[in-house]
Length: 429
Length: 176
Image (cartoon, rainbow over all chains, first blue to last red; front, side):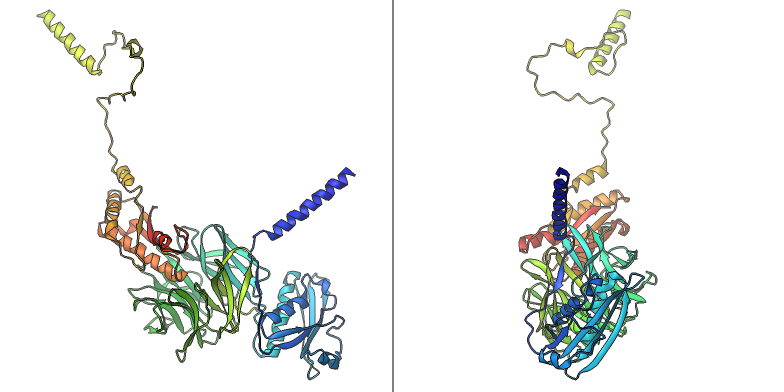
């Protein structure tokens, strides 16, 4: 009796401890919460998959959340019972005001993998649009659901989805810095590096497998490259002075970065293995924050050769630079859209730092954020969104915005300061 | 004559003994407790230095002591000019580095929190290099100083006001 009571007590204590640990700020819990989106949203019914409990993650729920968060879909109530082998009663679904319908099945394979298959129907026309099956490691069930959401998104909007992509960002909790990788929806956050010294400027390799970043772990800024999956790290640049601002060339063979090893902060290129350092430009000013055009032929960068910092462009191998930004006295942190047409950057107006976008062809620019300390814009791989660091309620947060600035979404944060976002490339299927 | 000489020798010996440098072995050693000291002794006097004492003057240590509380150079907003008031500080560091060519410094540039992280890193670098240049102009070897930057990542003072900002726009001179 006594034994069982104390056992029950210890179990209760364990449960309480578990709850405390779950609530502890081990990871910044980041979620994208798009709400208040007006306009036309496609009504879509996602039926719970048959035998969904065989998956460690709720497949239909993840798909629903992805599509709703994009701001382009509205979820329609869908009772269970349908699967990908069913013949839907389209008239019934039309009466529920659904334009599209998704159903599927989950199975456990003998080798432990999870088999997930689904179909997407056009309810209005009464036709099948996609049918697909994938077998994944149970830990990748969430990824599989994001991929299905991407397929649906692409089929119904014509644009590639970014639900299966990942973000990297830096959190600061007390004096501890962490480089964190999360799904684009903010779920499944995992710490890639934790350090007592600052980490800044993470940059995804085009293959999505490596991150380059600036770490101050050795008492100064050095550039490191880390294999995300294995954790293997290597020093890319540790020269005299400061090593910073890594940017991958689109083909992943080399990076541009800024080094002070020859005095001043100047632009260099370096092979991905750290060999072949070569100077790209020579100025008596600060040249930093390089950023390749998507075709790899140009480098956009920040220079204060004209006084205040402005954005310039030069051939990727070096050469004469053209000034790109002319409005205002302080324009920094260039990012180029995947189609190469739009420049996102930070501009100072009054005492505020805000995200602006410029049509590169016309030079027309527009401020799209409205806070006062916005930083580090980065494009989603489909070019539809920009993620950036901001400050709200005295805390560092991440925001996403459409390119017109009309739909802004905070990434909900429970604990740490969050900064330095970078959006990974499309995941390989 | 003989006596006189002996007496002179004694006097000389006594004089020398007075200096405390030589003592005849067969004479009883002076015992401190034998002296009747007045009851409330004033502050104990340090013993007189030995006649053969040599006080080492370690210039390294002296120069190091001189810069002990002179390790930070502050800057005006948006400026990398080493202000006149910090010239004496820079001079002392130069004297120390020139005296000991094996001594090396890391010059850590910092900025206030306003603006981008990478651009601030470059601004901090510029400040650190300005201090490095001031030192090399005074004869310090380039290999003795490394200018690096922390940008706005490591503020000395928290707060979003000029008081904090002015403390954060700085270069810290640290021994390597």
